[in-house]
Image (cartoon, rainbow, N blue to C red):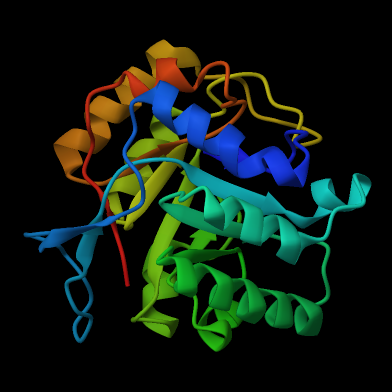
Length: 238
């Protein structure tokens, strides 16, 4: 996962992301023309085409604000690099403003063929037409998200094996695991799981048939180490 807390001039961001993607051995964000099988989706939801594995980008509005960067301009730059998904993280933005941001960022992402992910806000994810919502340990659980928004795909953050096991049992559309490396994007980060912890989590996710996203401190310099892990199930794309 690539976080906007990393400092990059916007004009050089697509090249930097592409370079990281190449070093990691991860593919571009093209849609794989096959269906995921055996998916335990709620009644009425359709099976989605799979998305090739690669870099999952986060546009963190608070981090961008400290650098005087416009989130929509940053989103366009990130989308040009072809991540497999792009999350808008704006925990301190008022709901009306966030809804507008999600809609405008969603238009950019859809034009680039990239699924957009809303952080935390299930209601705004639905109103903005997002592909996914990403929830944390203190947010709505996966089963409740699916009851109120059955057409929305759900990812969940986990920070240890106990949390991971609980998340896998709820059958989300993907799990995020970390932080893998030290990170400055959060004021009070969880303990680092390291590459060994990530390998263990990846093996469990693979057994469960659920995609896993590595989070926390993943930079251009360490992308190759993360990308060296064996392939996991791919993210689904609306």
